[in-house]
Picture 1: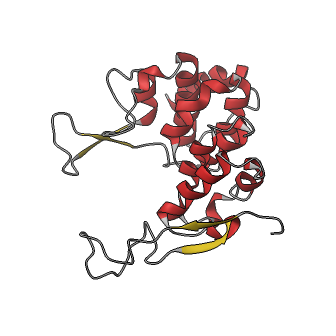
Picture 2: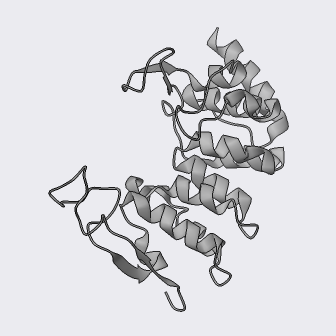
Length: 225
C-alpha cells in the first residue's frame, strides 16, 4: 500500500529471555526486530495489533478507519493478531469510526470490549451491529467467568451470557488487570444485547427494527411452550 508508515516492532531481546532462554520465540512477539509497512503487520503475532494501533493513534498521517476496514472480514484475520484489541486501542483516537470499531470487536468475539464502549453509540446503531453479526446458534450460550474465591489457576465457571447481562450482580468481564463490572454497562444496552444473544442462541430470527425486539421474544416464548 502506497504512502504507508513503516514501523519497527522490537523482538524478544535478541531472541532470548528468562522465560525462553532457547530463543525460539513464541506467538506473542517475534524473535527478531521486524520492520515493514503497517498493513504487513496484520498477521498472527499477538504484539502486532498493539504496536500498530499505538502508532496510528499518535500519527497524524495514518487514517485509523483505513486499517479498521481491512479487518471487517474477521474470518480472514488470524485470531492471534487480536483484531478486537486493535479496534479497542483505536477508540482513543477521535478520528476513529466508533461503529466500525465496535463491529470489529463484536465480530472478533471480544464482546466485553464492545459492551464497554457501546454507550458511545445511539441504541439503534448498537442494535444494528449485533443484529448484523455472523454469530450463529451456540455462540452465545456460554460465558466463561473466573470461579468465585479461586486464585488465578485456570479454574472457570460457565454461565449464560444473556442471564449475566440481565442480572450482572458483581460479575466482571474478566479477572486481573483491566477487569470491569458488567453492571456498569447501561441497562438499556445490557437488555438489548441479552435479548439478541438469547434469540440467536435458540436459532430465532431477529427483527429489522429495534422496537420489534420484545415482540420476537414474546413470540418465541409462546411458540416454545
